[in-house]
Amino acid sequence: VVAAGVPGRRIGRRSLAGDVLGIAPALLGFVVEHRTEDGVVAVRLTEVEAYAGLDDPASHAFRGPTARTRVMFGPPGRLYVYFSYGMHWCANVVCGPDGTASAVLLRAGEVVRGAALATARRPACRRSVDLARGPARLCSALGIGGEHDGIDLLARASPIRLLAPSTAVDAGRIGTGPRVGIRAAADRPWRYFLDGEETVSAYRPIADRRATGAGIADAIRQTGHRDRSR
DNA sequence: ACACTGATAATCT
DNA sequence: GATTATCAGTGTA
Figure 1 (tube, helix red, strand yellow):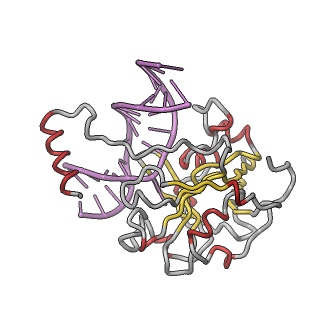
Figure 2 (cartoon, chains in turn blue, green, yellow; figure 1 turned 120 degrees about the vertical axis):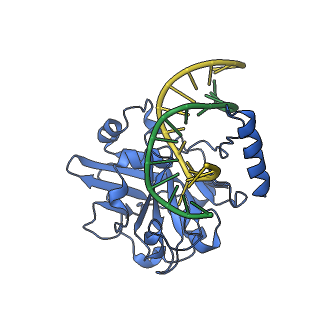
């Protein structure tokens, strides 16, 4: 647990300009802090995933820049926020040089400051370890939404900042595995987490909706679709 | 603890 | 019209 009052260190933009597969695990232990008029909430990252832009079929940026993915193609150190499953916001740290589109999804963390405010933002949450356990929960706890897409995480005056911990995490504690909830490139072990931390989210393969309450016609149609996509 | 499923809308085909 | 970088609720153990 990060002691209250210990300020995180600011980092240089160049430290996020390299290979996303090196940056993603290095961000474990970093703190994301959001200051609003309601107060401050800070989350220490315990789980992230790497997305490699044009080189990664699972990345939103795989097919090139669109209105949604424009921020990912910009300079590193900005926040890419997307809307998921009709109700949730999720956030990424944009990495790599300007013009490329890799990013690190913030999958889970431990609330280290502002637990009361985070709890107020997450009324359905029963256990404190679940406050930011999951990418959409993390955004809820921090008060991050679509209005924050593109915000610079490295500027001193930004309301949302990414800060380095006072002591780096032990590299031996970093676990890896396949990314959660994706179908494309599901074999790439680009999820990184702090092994043994309670706030790491449970691994779940993508939901298979073929067998859910569908009629025979639906089952046939959807099975056909699955076969076509192979 | 783990499995299953409906909710819900932007995005892309 | 299908898919989706998810969550909370409900049910089973």
